[in-house]
Image (cartoon, rainbow, N blue to C red; front, side, top):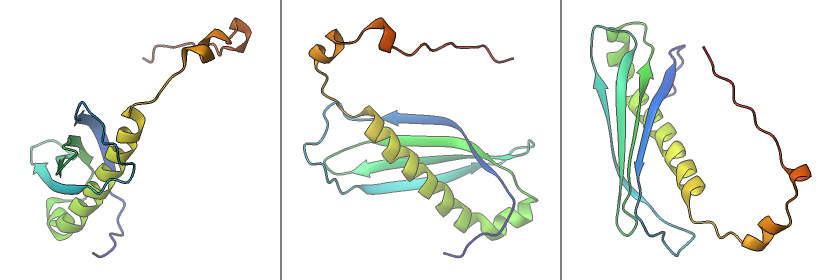
Length: 130
């Protein structure tokens, strides 16, 4: 794969993950992944994409990332499409692995909650963005 030297931006607008109910027991998991990047041509700019990842084997997972790619032109897109698809897939794989780590089962001890005092809690204030 060649490196793309371009100023186009790739953004993520939606992420969807459907994971199995049971987590694998093995911490080192080899994931065989079937992937595809579909580009949705429309009159709008930037170009939309959907990257789907589906793991095969013991740990079956479906994952999708939707976003936009800012391009100079469709002619330029046709020149870089293969490399761009690999970059989107790589970024989607990174997001998927991070989400798997965030959503795995984590044992919690109720005893640890009984020692928390109000003085030790952090106050979080949410502000509405206009």
